[in-house]
Structures are given as structure tokens and as C-alpha cells.
Image 1 (cartoon, one colour):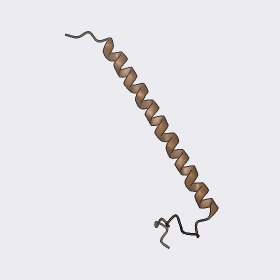
Image 2: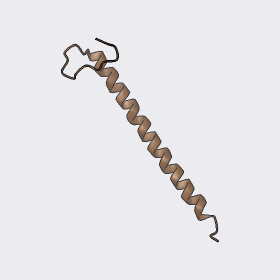
Image 3: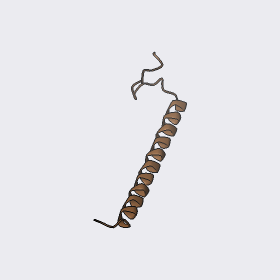
Image 4: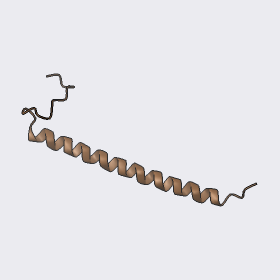
Length: 57
């Protein structure tokens, strides 16, 4: 099997370690997405706050 191939989820050759590694990677990705969303929200709020202090012409 090519190392770049992703076996089907029904493939019995997947080891428990493979599932644990995939679960760890998925959790890491979820954490990264949550951090990015939080940062985006903070940046948007900072932009709104900064714009509210600028007088309109």
C-alpha cells in the first residue's frame, strides 16, 4: 500500500494506534480552528472599537 493512500474505514488493517493518532490530529485541528475563530472575533471587536473612536467627516 502506498504510504499516501488512505485506507477505507472498514479496512481491518488499521491499528488502534492509527485511530488514536487520527483522533489526536483531529482534536489538534479542532483546537486550532477554535483559536482562530476566537482571534478573529477579538480582531473584529478591536476594529469596531477603533472605528468608533474615529470621527466621521
